[in-house]
Each structure stands twice: as structure tokens, then as C-alpha cells.
Length: 211
Image 1 (cartoon, one colour):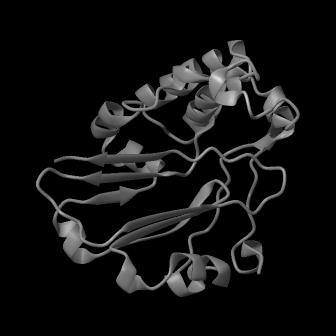
Image 2 (image 1 turned 60 degrees about the horizontal axis):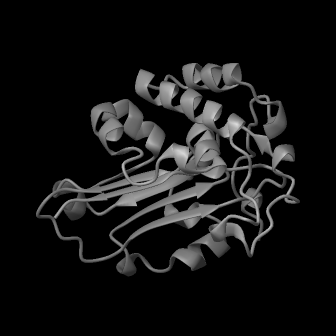
């Protein structure tokens, strides 16, 4: 089953090919989404880095067995796609439900299709302990100071063209935060699926586990 069979159609707001994006587009989309200043600034800086950084070549050790030059990256259509959230887990497409498995095997769940988060759930007991699971955009609105402290602490946008593109164009994704002294016995699941052909998604999953 195609996820689009059961979910509201994606609304692409002026989809644009990756090769046509300019710094002004990055800034305008941050303003449109009401992002805090630090995140908007980070996107623009990451885009500037990506623009001046070539794709990795076969002479680089990490990429000597993989040729990415013919993948057609610049033709990808890019935007943060908005999808309507489903009312319950049962409303997710069957293949996604099967991939996730039974509720007894998780304590929290977030599901993203294309660039939009369509479902989130978290056990009441886990939430009471202060565990956070939310889309990155929601984290930016509700806890901007915490997100600013955590974002890019492990993977920095200046490491490669790919990390630069991801930081500049990040959409959807999830923040998992477990406070100090808290133990979560069952897994926290994050599932990301792509449904729209030719559409580039750049989810950012940030996991912060205190001792």
C-alpha cells in the first residue's frame, strides 16, 4: 500500500529544485515558519557552506568505494512538505504499522512521511519523567534555548556538503531528550518514510541522553 492512499495529499509550497535555491529562499522559508533567530541563522550559514563545498569524491577515504556524482542531487525538489496528522496509530498505512510493531514494544513513537511528522505518541509514565519526543520544529518553538544548546553538538554542519545541506534544509525530524537519572525500559521509535517521487527530505534526528 502506498502511504498516499490513506493520508491527505502533500501540499508542496512552491517546490524548487535544489540547484535553483538561493540564500534568500532559505531565509524566507525560515521566516514563513516562524523559526527562532538562531535556527534561521544556522540554516543560512549552513547553506553558504554547502554552496562552496563540493560533493565528496572518490579520492576521499570515506567515499572511495562510493561514487555519488551521478545521483542527480541538483534535480531534487525541496521544500518542507506539510501533511495532515493522522487521528490515531490505526490510521497510519498498514506497511508502516507493520514496520513499527506492537505498542507493547515501545514507550514512544514519532512517524514522519516525506517532510512532515504525521503521528506522535508517548506513554504517560515516560512523559511524567520528563522524557521529550517532539518534531524539531515544535522543539524550536517550545524550548528554543535547549534546542540551541543541543543542535550540532555531535554532527556539525561544516563537516561536508551533505551535513551542510541537511542543516540548511532540515524538515520534520525529531528530538529525543532523556533527563539525568531517568531510565526508559522500552524503545523510543522514530520512523521516517518517503512517499513523493523526486522529493528530497532532510530529516534531523537529535538524541540527547543524560547519565
